[in-house]
Image (tube, rainbow, N blue to C red; front, side):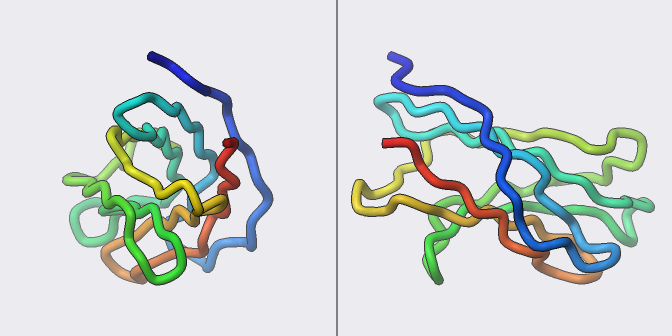
Length: 115
């Protein structure tokens, strides 16, 4: 049963040069947890330098991790989803961060959870 669905576009700090950047997060809440549809932009060049994952965090706690298993050289930006993410009721805001194989974690993208 769908409880809530809406795109969220939030301002965030500019990404470091060549690091992976979250540019949009869309959330869907259901009884089985949240689904995050995360759009990542990165200048993937191939297997030597590409965006290889993203995480949903609350402070130092990783709530979910999505591994990206291959470069997206010809598909930029790209959106990948992860379902069944359990977020405790007392958490009102999370950070989504993208990772790339050369520079590590990019800037956090803050998302307020509509509850």
